[in-house]
Amino acid sequence: MNNKSKIWTDSFLEKINGVTPDGKQNHKSVQKMKKLIVFTLAVLTAFGDIFAQPVQKITLAQSIEAATDSSLQAFIAQNTYLSSYWAYRSYKAGRLPSLNLQTNPLQFRRDFTKRYDSYENIDVYRQQQSLYSSGNLAIRQNFDLTGGTFYIDSELGYMRNFGEYNYSQFSSIPIRIGYSQSLFGFNSFKWDKKIEPLKYERAKIQFLYSREEIAEMTIQYFFALAMAQMEYDMAQDNVASSDTLYRIGQERQKIASISNADLLTLKLDAVNARNSLKNAEISLKRAMFDFVSFLNIDRETLLKPELPDKPDGLQISPDVALKCARTNNPDFMGFTQELQEAKREVDRTTKSSNFDANLSLSVGFNQVASNFAGAYRKPLQQDVVSIGFSIPLIDWGERKGKANMARNSLNVTKISIQQKEQKLEQDIVMTVNDFNIQHDLINSAEEALNIATMAYNITKERFIIGKADLNSMTLSLNRQNSAQRNYLSALRDYWQNYYKLRKLTLFDFATQEALSEQFEKIWKIK
Image (cartoon, rainbow, N blue to C red; front, side, top):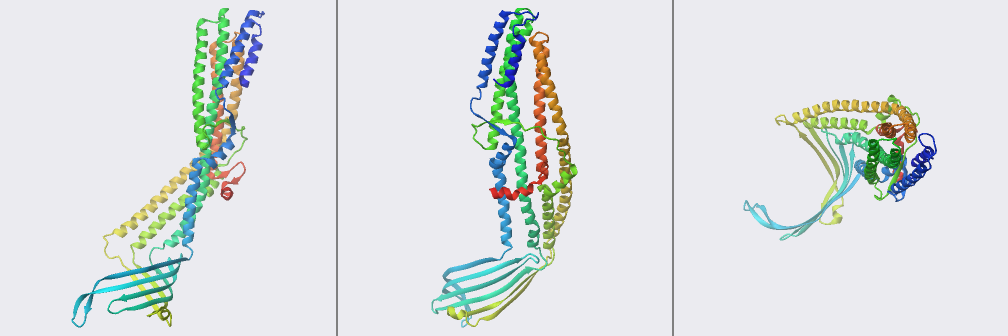
């Protein structure tokens, strides 16, 4: 039997302890009422065993901590960040010198090939057998400013011919230094340097944003369970109350102080109360299952939410919230990234439609000999200069059309970003306004709950002694239940708005701490 039922029973005993409506002692009535109390206690005990398994209490803070650490959504957020992390690592690796070995260790050919016979002045097919082998070791370094590539390489080749004339040759390039780039073309390195770090920074704060989204979802599941628990507790109290009132009604009908219609109504209330308790039990189990499934813990676990204390009068300035959001919100950083990517596409399509020239320079040494040592003896200088041009002549406007499309897409992107920023800022301001008035709503809901509880207790006492009718009793009970629901809803809305603001701004207004400062701490723990 819970505390509410015990208090109600004690009050009830005081009211019926042998006092009749005319104020005289009635021992027979007292005995019947005591039997009624014993029956009521048995009913309460039976319903109290519905959840006989051990129940663990859990606070809102514990729920959020468990969800952000172990829920499936937390694993998705972690792996999404890690994917972006390795993409950024790949970009950084591409900015460092790379060492590559390209080799063709063995190539053997035996076939007929066409040759020119100078004596007969004709082409003839002759059999040829040859063995080839080659390797190239190169160090390359991309240069972001110009979009070119420096390289230093060394190369060695071997060739062996079989047949009428057998001979071998080694070809070497001991060292060669070169540089190549497009003179007027698209410089992807420059744009990557602008966009890739931005993408990674966004990925980091997106991870924090996802954690706050998980916290926001946790609040929904937590208060859904709390609401189901409250409905179940009220249903238990209602069963005890309706059964007791029905027994009182039976006794009062014997002295003609209550009509048969009112007695049937009391009996119907008792039956409906039991049905409501069963429905509340089903709803509670469903809410419990949803909650523990979201937390990704054992589904047989029974949890009882402990409601957070009534919050203090924290007030948030819309200007401060907007400032924090512009600094920390990943959507604002995403707008910058989206704009840069659109500008990159304009640059790429515009330059691909214009005149372009490619430059390639290399200076080194090479030598050919019949043996390996001779291939590296007294190498000769090798100089290579190559300039190539790409001039679009007639493409029927294809390149120009793509460039115009990219420019139009850039304009659309700018307008779209402006609209998204306005919508996001409006959402932040409205959430701040909702949050700032939520504290007053909680106080009002608490006051209404206290008044409704007092009114119900007074009406119940008056009904027991026959000074209040059944309709007043039912109306008072409904008002008390409604006040309890309103208080819990106000408390839920407060925390939902608070964590939504944390998500939108990535700022903890209670501790005045930017959540971005927690990133390194989170991943050190992991």
